[in-house]
Amino acid sequence: ILLAPLALNRGEPSNAIELLQIAAPYDLAVPGSWSGFFGNLYPVYVRGTAYLAAHQGTEAAAEFQKILDHRGIVAMDPIGALARLQLARALTMAGRTDKAKASYLDLLSLWKDADPDLALPEQAKTELEALRGRARLAPPPRALAILVPRPAPSRAPPRRLPRPPFASAARQPP
Image (tube, rainbow, N blue to C red; front, side, top):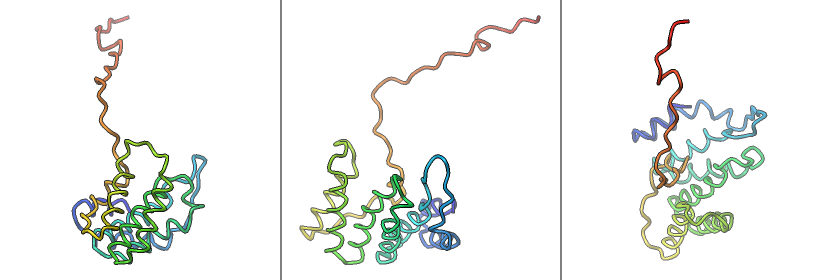
């Protein structure tokens, strides 16, 4: 399962799909933990992004819909919201524009109170407007870049950590 994102980053979506087929029988298995239910449907999410990268919109939409259909497993995992965006992109790719618009609107209603500095809601608005105007959509960014959005760079100077006491003075024998 861990090799699939690497294959995607190398531009080999078909290899990623093949690697993830091994995990398909266990897609809905919930190991559970005391820390919550995070990461349970990541193989499904990565498989969906691989289908998107392979320009197989219908198959990608089925994977992202699987995530949305099992919200109890997803719980508060960020892939629940990200799957909505990817579903809209997959439906657009598959030519199902009415359902894609509905998915974009669903996502934007979910994120209506989001931090205004987040790039994903703005990107979704731009893609929805392009879809409404029937303009040609730019290809989505690399599929896995959306898996974990990077925070904006901090303008504060880097914090220096204090040196350990043994680093500043030579140890003396007892």
